[in-house]
Image (cartoon, one colour):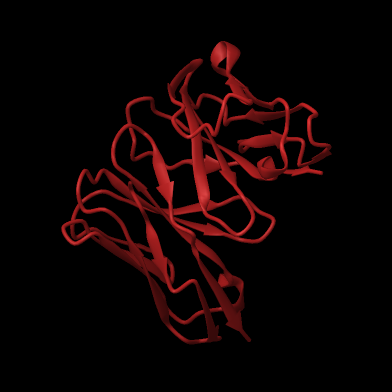
Amino acid sequence: EAGVTQFPSHSVIEKGQTVTLRCDPISGHDNLYWYRRVMGKEIKFLLHFVKESKQDESGMPNNRFLAERTGGTYSTLKVQPAELEDSGVYFCASSPSPGEETDTQYFGPGTRLTVL
Amino acid sequence: ILNVEQSPQSLHVQEGDSTNFTCSFPSSNFYALHWYRWETAKSPEALFVMTLNGDEKKKGRISATLNTKEGYSYLYIKGSQPEDSATYLCAFSSGGFKTIFGAGTRLFVKA
């Protein structure tokens, strides 16, 4: 069974540019999460989808970040325009059951974003 | 503000040593506590999810305990091996699916 995949693995962009990160969860997983780890700090929650609906986006830093999950399959996280402080590793995770908060989350390998 | 603290920040042990580290979390509104193992350049790998006070989980040489009343969990590694070198993350869920991670304990096992 394929795990969570993320694309690209690395992205280097200039301040002011736009970047779109993609996450493909494990097939059949309704829950999809985005997290971010800024250099040297802990992993921080960004938002959570159940199927195509945003359940909690309280961790999104500001309105330069837009996440979508059209069709309830893969998700994209767009940063527009990117700022220097957006640099970090963006992780996606998925878990199966919509009602089970104790479900194990399976993480993707992350996208390392560098904003110059 | 919900905070998850892990200690120590890093730990160096010799092969064969047993070791343990701590995760502290808010004792109110507890739902679940997760432990992950995270190797450099890989994705965090789930070790345990614990929900009940007094829970003990074991996977090979790694085990974990949970005390929800006082808000802590211990992760134990028996007979550490170099391949155990990784960052061990704990994450706390208080309901509503939001998961709060600690900063991790970085374990180095020297052969």
